[in-house]
Amino acid sequence: MKARLKTRSLVAAVSAVSVALIGFVAVPAHADTRSTVVAIESNTFTSINNITPDTNIVINGDVEYLTGQNFFYYDDKLNIVPNPKLATYKITKNTSTDFEVTYTVAPGRVWSDGVPITAADLLLWHVITSSDYSKAAGLGDPAGSTGAAFNSVNFGGVYDSHIAGIPTVSADQMSITFKYDSKIPDYLLNGPSFAQPVHALEELAAGKTSLGSVADGVAADAKFIADVKSKNTASLKAMGAIFSTGYNTTTVDSSTNPLLLVNNGAYRIKSVDSSQITMVASPNYNDGPPLSGITTMVIKQGIADGSPSAQALANGDADVYQGQPTADAVAQLKAIKTATVVTTASLAFEHIELRVASSGSDTYSGPFAMAGGAKAADLRKAFLLAYPRADIVDKLLKPINPNAVVLGSVINLPGNPQYAHTASLNGMGVYNKGTQASRTAAALALVKKWYPTAGKGNTPIAINLLWGSPGNTRRTSEAALIIAAEAAVGFKVTAPATAGWGGKLGATQYDAHFFIFDQTANPQDAQACGIFQSNGGSNYTGISDPAIDKACVALQAGTLPASTVTRLRIQIEQAAAKDAFFLGIFQNPNVTAYNSQLANVIPAPLSPSLFWNFQSWHF
Image 1: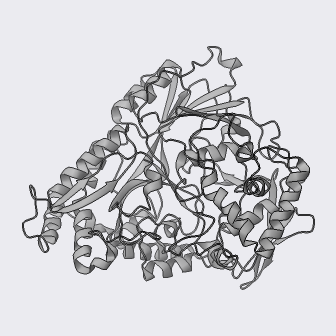
Image 2: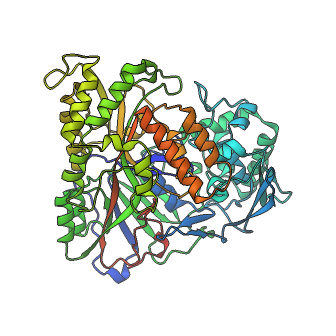
Image 3: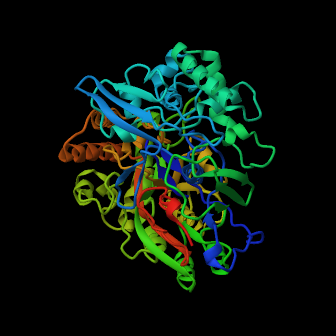
């Protein structure tokens, strides 16, 4: 149940059911002739488009990374590595009120169907990221009760707040200029990327079911530019319907509309079924680093983070695994003589969050609702005080990472020079103070203010807790610890493993969620605003706090001194502590195990940690 912090949003990743290893295709014995890698993921693939709220999960993002190219990527040292083979970018105007960035696509770059990649494809970013444009074009208010035609996680944040007008596409359609009303921080991270090929979106919206000619694609690009400029509501709404749900699938085979599979990456999706995703080298790929010999990438999906993964690697049925194993599974992995096992730090963290307000058109009036006033505030604080964070870390994490700690901050994680300073001032210390026994006693006292007979054996407050799919031993153990600890202070927690939980984070029948946010970029706002800001793309709690929003506006308004950034981050966590709706639990350790004959597997702190340099893998 790992979650991923994307550049502009957060992705929730799932741990899926354990499946039998029957059906694994054994890999060839002679490594020097091998061109196929089999990777294991505990998640389950749900969509070719990973930037809607329901599909913004790790496995979808990993497949997107393997099948797509963009302006840059992060390496294992957190350096941004540009990709000039696809496109370049430069600041073309730099004043306090007029900040412009121009992106230019390299000539001759093509999508997998041979259609040229152009600036029209970057114009889509504006449509799926600008709330003002969505409203002006009749596509709906992303922050409203019914949402927008393009159900994108990108709405909200720096781009949405500061973009000025519709981006300008050059006459040759190879460059596009984005104009902002101020010098935005991390302009590259907050700027556009190649989300989907717009010619394919146009053709899908027109009901086409087969690939067209290159000329058809070029004409569709021109139509898209015209549609955006003229705010063609009907045409854009049709494309929005495809963008929002048309890419959602758990099966890809010969009957799949090939327009859905058009991409610009090193691999193209060949097939998807309940057990695996198979990707093969794309013959038209010409806009990124070349492959070093791996022409087929297979992801075995839904394999539990434990003995099944270790056994697959030991049997030679898989080559690489990264996940959330138990201590026993780590020992199994280390006992495999043909495997290399490394444990590294990551910019990912486990957390517990409480729903406090409605989500879209769904209303929330449960025990933690802000509208519940002092009573709800006491119950939120009690739930967090009783939450067995120390037990979770001591029993489930320390056997894997002896240096694991209960988090005092999620904005500045351990390893960040500002971690200790932030944790000492952000107000979260109240949830670490004393022993768990004293915290539980304090929690019980808060609950008894409203339920005088509450306590062990009397649990009058029903809590529906959402977490990942069956098959993850660590998650199952974590849920059991939570249920027992909260029962002692009057909460009756219902917490079954839930398949497809990533798409249920907005559902108001759940009072709380626990999962890992997995960071994909390292911006000035540390992506805290994606979680805590009122219109944040990964705000699954419904929180709307003016103090948080004010700090986020400042963090997103321009490049700031490090001391100011730290101060604003602390203010955000102080507000979160006051509202009592969010707590970090632990920093996730990356446990990676791989076939020792597979070269250049180098886990990185940011997601996609395992696949960031897949082009350089080889046997």
